[in-house]
Image (cartoon, rainbow, N blue to C red; front, side):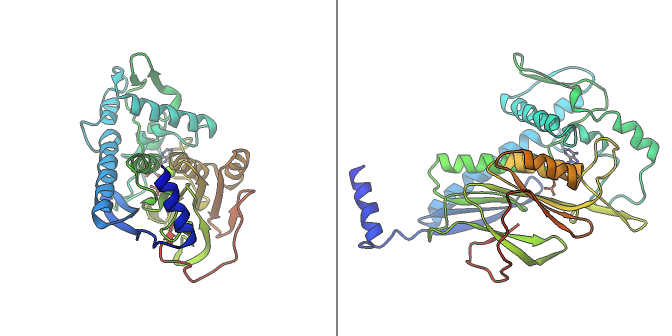
Length: 340
Ligand code: ADP
Ligand code: MG
């Protein structure tokens, strides 16, 4: 311990050269999206071991929450909807429980049972016409988080009605980013960024001691940065309607579903949430998208330590009470900046 203190002291005086730390970055496809894992390390070998550990952790989570994988715990819950409770890991049970808390907080705007309509709305280019209103009406009856029954003692989850389904599209990436970050910290990685296609969390600082900075971009013109913000041991998550959508009769329908109607939510282009926890940020970004600007801002302004920026469909920029915008700087302030 003593030698560590001495070393720090000398470093501050500049008497010995600092160990040369750099940021190492790897881009991989995980959970169906682009994950960019950046870590500060002393060597490529050290960085590689961190990045491998983070990747394994994200794959593990994907295996648990994926609805494409027929054997995942999530698929088992869905297959047994209206039939029987399914025994699951404590980890998944607790994730579902936290999702239910967000549902209560947002009065059902956030609802993992939205997934009952995911066979109707497809945003992969395969949809050729507007879904039938009757089909939507029929499926929307299965959306209701109150029909998810959790039994802690038996560690089971039960969806009460046949046809019900849960999906973690709006919370899974944030959860995975938090878990990967926690794992890296636990094995000694001093700083880094986990960026899941714009849903990101950071810890520590850049090797030069400066804060990680995130660029807030206009969703319609990603080249145009309108502000840089420091992200200090925190998360920034954006939900937007500009990547996954379909167009019918000049109307755009995005992948965020209003659980009350079964139709895609309207009125907002993007929502960015700033808060320490990426999982909460992820869930709330989706929630505000559904709630709309007024109710959304109202909710965020009541929550401590959570801020948001909304761009509505008329291109207005709205902010929660404590967001401080720097004046627009168009040039990057350092090479580690991340665009969100
Ligand atoms: P992105 O995928 O762009 O990060 P979100 O975090 O908002 O955006 O997640 C959108 C996904 O969440 C949808 O593709 C769908 O899987 C799921 N989803 C859609 N509507 C809801 C909702 N009301 N509540 C919970 N999850 C939803
Ligand atoms: Mg989300």
